[in-house]
Amino acid sequence: MSSTAKPQAPTPQAKAPTPRERARARTIADIVRIGREHLAVHGAAALSLRAVARDLGVVSSAVYRYVENRDELLTLLLVDAYNELGDAVDAAVDTLPEGDFAGRFHALGHAVRNWALREPACYALLFGSPVPGYRAPGERTIVPGTRVVYRLVRNVDAAHRAGALAAPAGPAVVVPDKLAGDLAAIRSELGLEVPEELVTRGVLIWTSLFGAVSFEVFGQYGAGTFAARDELFAHQLGLLAGIIGLV
Amino acid sequence: MSSTAKPQAPTPQAKAPTPRERARARTIADIVRIGREHLAVHGAAALSLRAVARDLGVVSSAVYRYVENRDELLTLLLVDAYNELGDAVDAAVDTLPEGDFAGRFHALGHAVRNWALREPACYALLFGSPVPGYRAPGERTIVPGTRVVYRLVRNVDAAHRAGALAAPAGPAVVVPDKLAGDLAAIRSELGLEVPEELVTRGVLIWTSLFGAVSFEVFGQYGAGTFAARDELFAHQLGLLAGIIGLV
DNA sequence: AGGAAGTCAAGAGCACTGCTCTCTTTTGTT
DNA sequence: AACAAAAGAGAGCAGTGCTCTTGACTTCCT
Image (cartoon, rainbow over all chains, first blue to last red):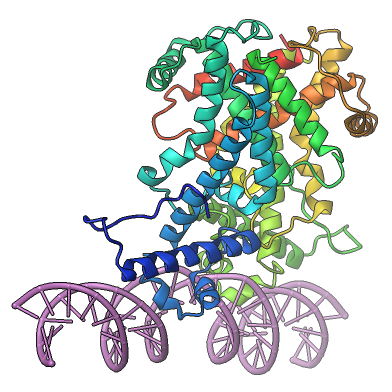
């Protein structure tokens, strides 16, 4: 369970949680816990409500008292995983002082990778191919799902404000007009001071970070091609840091 | 169907394909074609042999005469998709002259993205989360699965041999010893002349390319964040080209 | 205190899946 | 024409998501 998963208060008067509500919340938490175990063992697409019910010691239809259907259980697991990843990233980043922008970037990257290797099934649920027939409800997943990228771009923005960003490496590339509109919206929504051209570089290191992690978690590197995967990833992080001027 | 899918010749005397073998090969091709349609509509995990049998106009047990089980059908689809992607990349790259290394890199990137957007389910099968319980047989998938990355690194190597690679952008990053061993093996196996440090950059642009495509295909960009996705991708390709010195 | 309302577990049932088995029909070859 | 191999049909097993009904229990309000 994620530490930031708040106990939901569906009733208007959220003052006194009745014993019934307590028992209900506890059962739902058990379902999520068992669901995560099944997810880790069998994968997302093979997540079975009946199997969860068996492990819970209850008949399959009883689970539907707590979880509307299989999709809602997936949503619960999705939010839980997003928050766990966000917590891991926050904890790793907060270890370093605010001014150590490059160190914080590396800490963020390693935190993502370590969590992904520790929970490959959860990572696949978040960043792998979408589960067929399942559509994540944005109103419940957008906020936890954007924690990592927000943390990433805010770190870059803070480095820019502090004047700690080196001149971006590589030849200057012009930002086309249509793209500039999107970037302007992002900058204003997040209150960024970093210029547009660096926002695109931030997006690139974001997608590249997860691209590297996905290739490793999903087994695209093949069996014996890379034995030194820790070093490979650290090296790639260094290159990405250079792209955006985080030295 | 991929144009490079060779008709398999299981019999020792592969001289005269009997009418029975012809009919059998045709039926298998039909199964793969219908399987691809189902893959595109319902996704990989929901691929159903019974549904394929229905569309084939045959009872479910009959398809087991042609395909050993569901996993083997997945393998057939996997190889077919790998070859289709490889063909698309080859065709796009071969449009440009051999000496236009930067143009060929951009063509490769756009070919990957265009194919992925055209066949998102196939792309998810190749580069998304692994299908639970399915293990791709390496002896059948490694060769078609490495066509794109080989084409990518060979293009970089050719550019290096031609002296067309600019000095790599960004600060110099040392390659640790353990990683150097892996890189040496890759260089000798592929007969590369490009130095180790640039091989790591090649690996980075490889993973970054597919990271960007995956984020777009798998919907990680959210609903309305990026309206100018073509421009965003082209811009990212330009940045990646700069990483490796392809100007 | 007692009844109304709400909650929960259980079980049957429907339609679907992968896969195996047996039986019958088709088909190519001799 | 006869025969053997290949292919199709159908039943069946164990599993899935999900719905519906039934009975038991708890909580709350009058």
